[in-house]
Image (cartoon, rainbow, N blue to C red; front, top):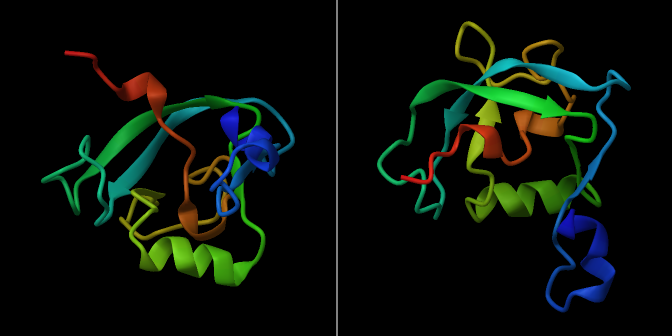
Length: 116
């Protein structure tokens, strides 16, 4: 992933890394996410929507440098999706958050994006 090359890419100091899932295994399942306010063009007009996404990865846990960095990403609206449980609450617990990312941040859900 490009995030692993951040030392080589100017301006990428704030990029998160994606590391092994907290379960330490490949996860393939449907998970529920909620769309948050962000500058994403793909999610425009969908804030508050909850939808299932296909999760299929072994390295999907979002790792940031520290809590202040995560707070900065959130304050800038750069966390577009969050894992939620069956009650619609942001979660860090397994299996609703299959990778264990802080504050329910999922990796990019590329398997659920249509090109048309």
